[in-house]
Length: 388
Image 1 (cartoon, rainbow, N blue to C red):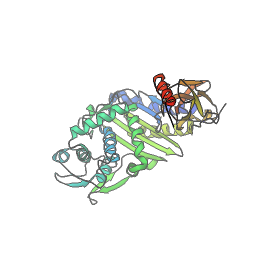
Image 2: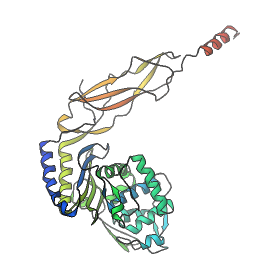
Image 3: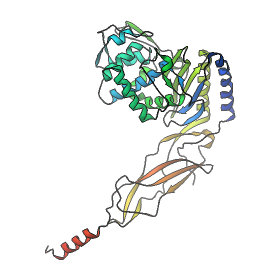
Image 4: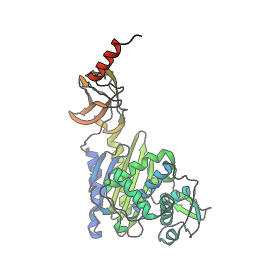
């Protein structure tokens, strides 16, 4: 049986996609003189599926790109209710002393959490990054501990950040294109909640229009459907970019690190995103109509329990393979008690060209207690001596 569904699929890049990538790789040939190893990744933002990568697991200095983790960690605090955008933060001497891009915070200045987010996201402000971290955790060092916990949850095995702004000690802010892609996917969870407006803003002001914020991510202005995220550059890192674009149900992201030339990097970024939209599409998983409604129980007081499949999600497929999906339900004839609600009892497997590509779990939608002979004897005796 063939059915239009969502899949995670290992891909062979099409001729058009290969041409675009190869042409862009020529851009990176000058990097040897800068002692940089360019890295790139194209991925599905919602699922995290990698569609193309080159040196994506190579650890490199990323400098101010570490602000993506600062934003994510602070966003987690807002999402949990620990902070709100209307709360007020007080700038410390540490925030005042940092150099580079800033919103000119003096020690003791008050600024809202919302303004700090805008200053970091749009204006790349280093003082705002420290003030935001201190508002969340009290000190920058404690905030970095919170970052580490989130990094572990996301599986960021190659990421080491020693400060929250990346301007100072840029060479010590280490990550990979693959790890930054995971941060982007995590940030995307908050896109429709409270961050999307900031990431797509080109020009803004904070502190009563005292400080102007200019977004250096050109794709916000130049690329159709761009939803953010960040551009950064320094001698230690080269040119770096993390961005994503959304068109319809498709959301693709890119991370480019250690590029030697800003203009060529942005040109490559557009080609890489174009290749994503031209060659891939997202489709939603469909549960087969003939999925059994229940499963038999052995050694239980209940002869069967109802079952349910997990909700189907959207995943990326090659456009020319979206119609060629085969489905197979993996479900035993019976299972043994005890059975608990939401216990996994089977899987739905999806194939393309006879290759396994994705699965959805099947769960018990009820419970079944295991037969207990001691309990049976008690019940039997109760029935015998019952006078009701």
